[in-house]
Image 1 (cartoon, rainbow, N blue to C red):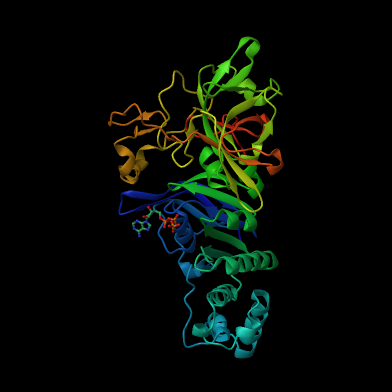
Image 2 (image 1 turned 45 degrees about the vertical axis):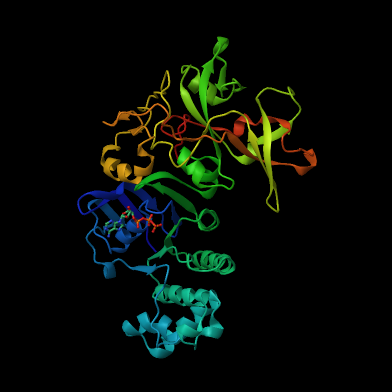
Length: 443
Ligand code: ATP
């Protein structure tokens, strides 16, 4: 067991593409850390740098008190499991698991006993004397995990180990990986783009985007107290509603969130009221998960939104309603990448407001990734203007102005009817235009 520390670590391929960009992260001794993010955000590259399979372009990597940046993979005490844990086809499951021990000179009887012990934890005792081709995908992956961990690594690295399995096997093996990591108490870094795996397995989750860290916290923290709009959008089904709003400050410093025809007052005791009270006219992004709304009688309280119920969907354990409220909705994936429409004012906080200082190195990659959007998109990153002149329609929005929310079927609502929604303001997350919380998250 050992702690891992990444100190401003970057990886640039071919001198051009920053796959990982200035990442600093601590993984505690015995912690289960999940790297979560969309395809291409740099999770695997980060994992491979920890394993010593990729050179670090800049920054330092520490294992406990040892600077491991230049250590060879075999001196790092790490074990790695990939999507397809390739096995030796002509060796039985037992021989596969024993192999690293035998290579290290361990006696066959002792190695076999260790393999049997691990097989019990991984629930493959019955498959130990079979060849890989006779095993199911899940069993093969268990053998691969057994082989990786049998030498008791100090660090266990897993790169989407469940992604080739069917849903049932995934759930089963996910639970076993969680139990095994707890039993063995080995420092683990686990890469996935699956939010359920992240939420169920992790002690802490690191949410990544475009080679950078968006958020780090316990599953509860990143889900219920997300640092950025992207992080809020990556976790949760249905996805969080991100609504474009303008801050209005009335007499006596009362703050409300203006959605066009409708507005929601923030209680004066809400600390966001204090933060926003000097930002009249500023544009913000308001995040509300689907369960932040309750169907209410018209005018039954402050902080309501009203709209037309367009669609009702039955999801087995819940009903999901799509309500057209005339509110401009934003796409979480684009917040902080494509700027919002020009606004009279931008939020500027004491810490410098929208964080754009690292934007420049991303531009070439972003430009190519956004090629399809480019004709329409305003290619600005936060406050950084690029040479391309933006078109006035360019926004990080989708035009379908539907709020997505859970409803109680007992409310007896019909599609096409007008609904009034009480909004629990304590459950709203308010972000600035760059997608960072206006009440900054520090943890
Ligand atoms: P996925 O979930 O699809 O595996 P990821 O988050 O693990 O994605 P990486 O595989 O780390 O992402 O890739 C990060 C970026 O680095 C991507 O833009 C990718 O194209 C690029 N990249 C990865 N490996 C190389 C390489 N050997 N040469 C050049 N670019 C690379």
